[in-house]
Image (cartoon, rainbow, N blue to C red; front, side, top):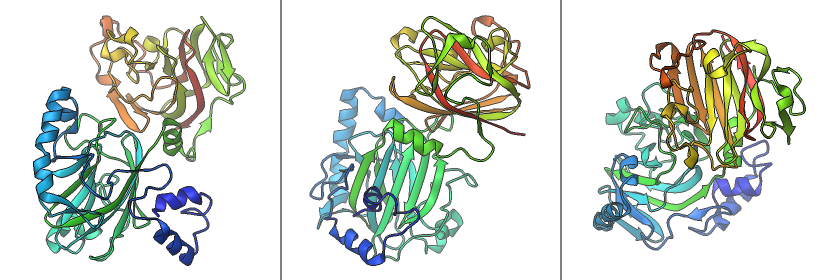
Length: 446
């Protein structure tokens, strides 16, 4: 039984306050039959053949995922000969000879939890690509020739992240000796990744950078790949559980760190100003009344700050976050900016300027698209305002990082007179739609 399976069975004990007794844990581990997924998981490898897999190399997944279906199928099918040459199934284990293309899932995944076992040999080098992007590293931690690359720190880090950035090196060295099976557990939500190797955490919520295009985040969906080169590696018990939006939001938010305080009590508009009669509180969330709107805002003003909140869009929903709003005028122009909240994928908005899409500094800088949860589900967002810069992280993926002091071109040539404000109120730019906001907390920062 995998670590994750035990955690689901014993949520109050496993990896929390009360570890399972060693004998009970051993019994549970041996009771799980090979390649039988724990509850909620599916087996990516069926234990008998290579069905549901194809082959790809270190290549930008965004390019092959954008191919027309017939072109992708040709690429997919052409890879299978190479896969058959270098991959095989022996005694219920996936075996690679250290050569060839990387085993790649037919299915593309968004947020997920992945567990697997692997066993390798001296001088081998491998890894697990997440949504087609490298990689959770697996290698020989005794190979002195690669110590300068970080091999001495062990496996389980996000090796392709830049040196010195979070996740690049594992938090601990947790590799088992050659000849023994290692157990890897990976959780990916948005671009953020958590990794445990043999029960020890090696990555704690670090952002996996896009190795292929530094200007873009990792894709919102993509395949799992088993990388290999340099020596034999074996895999077994490869199980994956897809994570829904509610669970993803909880994983990303956790508990608000020290310094954050709620600015909305979930009951009424105490501490808020503006046309609050145009809004209502429903199920603990702020929402415009039908046909109403206008900007409401906190009594308190903020300079540099981080806001954490959840929002839910109805089909075609439109609203916005008022950033450093002076309390009068239009937040999009008289405040520092309106951080757009919009059902960007709705056909009504197909012809909008990119600077009007969700997460954008309205009319000034466009955000990355494709990272909203499906309409009608809650999204989690963090917005960081520091001096003239604004960063937006949506559902675990950074979609905007803009310095508004450098903006010189504006939508419809309409100048944003308030963009250089250094302080102001936080609020919502109601546009008559029943967009909902809840769990709103702000931390001022120096």
